[in-house]
Image 1 (spheres, rainbow, N blue to C red):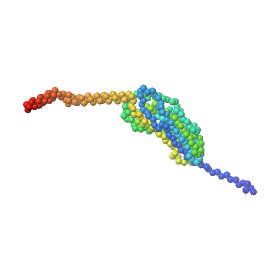
Image 2: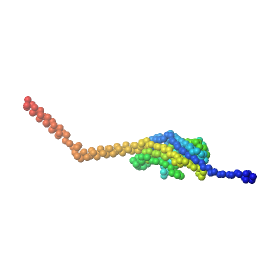
Image 3: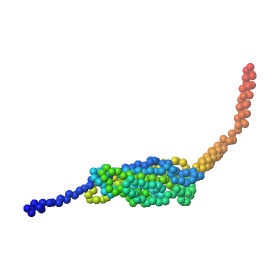
Length: 276
């Protein structure tokens, strides 16, 4: 009888969560135009705003605990720390995003306003084809947005929308013919021994934003090119004129040649009269 009452058993079965987090994104517009502005144009930020959108989805069969995504956007030309973008707005459909917010600036610093003709000439003739901007781990030259969505059930999706504005510094860039920004987004769950991540290669997404130079030199540099071309052309003209003068081109006896031709014409006229 006692053995019948003591027939309970507790069986512990370790559970594991199989999750598969995917992230993808895009940017609008995909490219923008930059380059030095005219002298009389007021300094201003980029008219067209840059919008990044990233979607995160849990495509696995289990719930993903404490999911977060890290978005890194290049924000300065190394080795300088002058920021290229203003942060206008950051929105997420779930959870919240943390980032280093700073004041909006739409003017150039006094150092950037200085006219450096020699540097501009070197940049014009040694301009690179394309400059790739990317971020490294713990990169101080990048904007970092860390967004936490909390737990995500299977099939659940969350989105992050980032609105940026280009500062005058990026618009006045003149050292390269094209810029390519590589924006990286990495999604990950909270580290736990019971979590099994499937297809980890889909946890990272890259979005590319391109900038194209308008290929117009600075106004004062255009005037310098015109003046230099005129002086060079006039110098070549004087040099050729001197060579021709030394060769005697301007000392030809045109009068003697003309008299000789008249004499020949007169002789032909006399001979024709005699024949008649």
